[in-house]
Length: 392
Image (tube, rainbow, N blue to C red; front, side, top):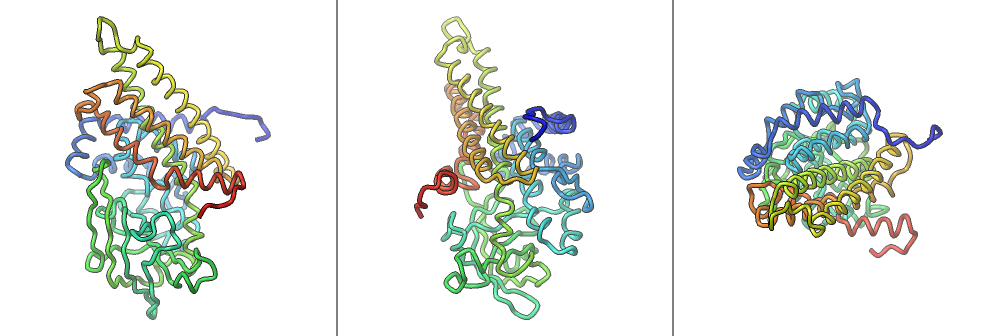
């Protein structure tokens, strides 16, 4: 950073923020409440984002994208969540914005040409199939197996918490090609595919859940799914390292989404505290209301700074594990606290579905769990940054 520290967004970045905010504002609270309650994918919103060219932000230009960095992607994600769409909006486009990174970096030229332009124009929905019921956060324990059979692999197993599986044509699927006890190390022997979801061999069942109901989360049962060798990403057995490539940017994207929810929740709380009169004065005059909101402002601003540092490091090719994990940790905390305080500010009305605050509350709570829990981030920081002995 030879030119000294610079906290200003470039003109292009400011334009992205403004344009995305204007587009997202076309979809109001009523739209998101209806989609959430009907458990219906926000197709109109997704199509509008695609038509605006935003899905291809981080896809290289030769495949129709903009070739921009994670900084721009996080600005987009934050504005989408901040519009009031929260996680329903962000999750509808999350995989398209960032999730194809393993394909961009390690996929064959044929695979890139066949899929990336379709991601950009919104025509292709993809889900990410890693998590399994028996493995949780210990990815080395996945048991979904891919067995080579001539020029195909035959896959059997189960995945869980697979967002957008119902809406998706393809799945980015992590499998085990070498049994864990035969691999040199636990994370070896995992192989990544991008393949069609053949509904004759893949059973998808939505999970009933607390929030973010416009975008499905699913259990996926895979039964003798035949995958052509061409659908493999990179080399057999190297899948874990390919996935690692995307973990830091994903944490930054999630952090930005949590930040966006915190911001919109705080905005709504301030508006309500200015308008709601009890005991002949606006409730915002009471420090019991004002101080928590001011505190949330400070915490959101501080969390945003570490996120900005993380994305700058990544886009400048520097190591960013520490900052990416901290950004996710701090933004998730600050975002949820802001939503919780917004709900408290609204009192009984916050608990009612009419004000949408309960939706922000439910969806911001998710960010402390997914895609990695706050506790696992503290594990990472303790062992990898502080140098404390690993606990597991």
